[in-house]
Length: 307
Image 1 (cartoon, rainbow, N blue to C red):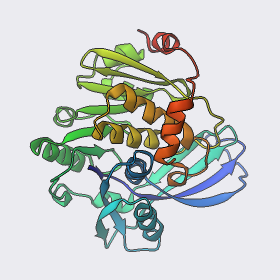
Image 2: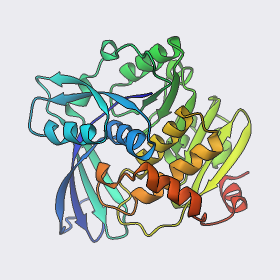
Image 3: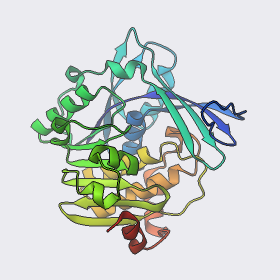
C-alpha cells in the first residue's frame, strides 16, 4: 500500500506558440481544464501507472472545482481522505503549453494550505509514504516524521524547489528531484555529481528531462537513459515518474527496475495532453520497459552528470 499526502489542483491549460516572456501577451489557441496537482497526479500514477493500491490525503474547497478532482482519483481507484476547507477554494493551476511541449505553471494553492499535521491518519498497512512540497512545509515534515516512527518508508519529491530543513531531510529514505531542485536542496550551483555530494540522503534520484535520470543508493550510482518519444505536453511527466517509481519500490523491485518504470511512465505521459489524463496504464509502462530502446548509452548520461 502507498499513501500519498499532498496537493490537488484544477488545471486551466492554454496552448500557444510559445510561453510568454515577462510583459508579453501571447494569443493562445485551445483551452481546457484538467484534474492536476502534484499530489493527486502522483497518487494516480502510483495506482494507474504503477498498479499499486494507493490512498491519498488531500484538501479541497467546498466548490465545483473539487468535483472533477475527486472523480479522477476515484476513477483511478485511489482511496481518498478529504479535508474540506470552508474558507479556501480548491487549488488551481494556470498552465501555458508551448508548441515545443514545454510549459510554464503558476499555482494558486487555495485549500492545499489547509492540510495540517493532525490530518494524517494511522499508516497501518502502508509501505511507502509519498510527499511533495505544494502543501505546508511543517505538515510535510510532520507526515514524514510520523511515517518514520511507524516504520514506513518516505519518498519526497522536493518540488516546487525550496531549501529543506534538516528535520525533514533526516526522515527521507528516497529523495526525487530534477536538476534545479537538486541545486536548491544542495545549495550549490554545479554539476549533478557535485550537488549529489552535498545531499545526505541514502537514496537520491535525479530526473534529467529528455536525457533520462540517475540515482545514488548508498554510494552506488545508477544511470537510466530516457526512452525516446515525440512530446506533446510535458505536464505531469515528473509526477508520472515519481508515482511509477514509488509503486515499483513498494512492490519490492530493485531500484534499477524502478528507474526503468519511472522513466517509461514519464516518457509516455509526454505523448498526451494534460496532467492526470496523460498518465499511462501499468500495462503500457511494462510494454515500453520490455520493448523500448533507451535514447543513448549510459556513458553519455554519466558524462553529462559529471561522473
